[in-house]
Image 1: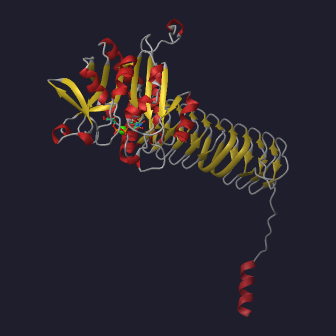
Image 2 (image 1 turned 120 degrees about the vertical axis):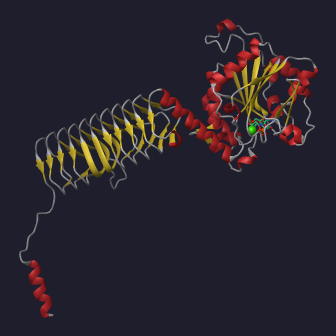
Image 3 (image 1 turned 30 degrees about the vertical axis):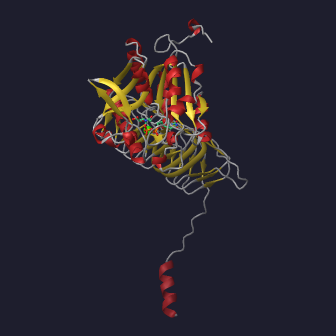
Length: 473
Ligand code: UD1
Ligand code: CA
């Protein structure tokens, strides 16, 4: 059906229609894992999400994902991303997978891509499409020269011109020496695809229908077929667990390099694990073995010491996060310091210049400006004002025998002595003082002193009397 392109608000690479077919139906036998290959996480996210994101950002107008093996699971991940899935019933090879995309309904240009190349970026795809269009190609294949071509399909050239792609399994010893390989990315005119795809046969070592045979079929009919050389990173495919680890490493390294270019101090980029989605401000320092995940956002001049794990955290400017700290869905405001060995659980908000020290756990806590909880403390479901001192060993008893959670509210400038328990629900007014060792079960008004512990009992000369008794025995 003819489509009025003028109605498209966001133009893709150019105004011509661009369809992307991503192949993700294979079993991933070499992964030796029960998880479908494309769901294996690369630098924190399923690899298929990376490929889909890159395609969307490249301005693809129609995205079709081929699913098969483990499709229920794959769909549960990609359909919420708005991706339309097409099922390939039997995994009869990459050409058969493309056939499942209902290619007769496609117009314009088509990018075909393997779902197991997670290092691909939108700019790469845009560049390939531009070359394909500028050179008025019928078919283009993206190639790369690599040191170890291993299992990749080899690009066979004659007098510099591409002739065919030969799969490693079907290649002669001489062909195997070729270092230029097929990255598994093809760009083809929809009508060319519709004409030659049905002609592909499965006469090869695996008895599969190879999409790579499109090249020789198109060449036989004098179509314009062009190899487009790309950087080696585009060739990083994932077929085994060790390739998965390599891809992850490269992605973390790429993120570290980008942050360094933006002025972030990274002590050892090889031991830094920052996901692509994370933001870090200039002048901040990241020590080794730090994991920053998801929507984590870190301000400027903030220091993150070793062995810190953060997921969806929002950390302000000039904050100190000391070694061994674990933070999830928490806000830490400017100039605060946290850790070493603190645990901040979801829905916690640490105020400006506040201090959370070692072995302190908080969950669902708002902790006011300049307040301090220096040591060995559990605060849960609590609202704590400004300039409060929480003594060592303080516990909010928020979970009651009725299996419900109750709140502790502490006003401004309250001084909580060490080893205090607040039995929630409980409220303490501004400027109150709680004596050490208290179990607070009743509300404390503003400016009051509350002490709730057994009175001290003293018996003089106790030890000498005990020894006399022993002698008599
Ligand atoms: C393929 C290419 C090879 C290239 C390499 C790049 C073919 C025949 N070979 O080999 O030239 O160098 O990629 O990484 O295309 N898939 C399906 N349905 C199937 C089979 C595969 O959807 O029936 C999907 C897989 O899920 C995967 C992609 O296609 O995402 C590639 O399949 P894979 O088996 O990994 O191909 P390679 O052997 O790597
Ligand atoms: Ca592969």
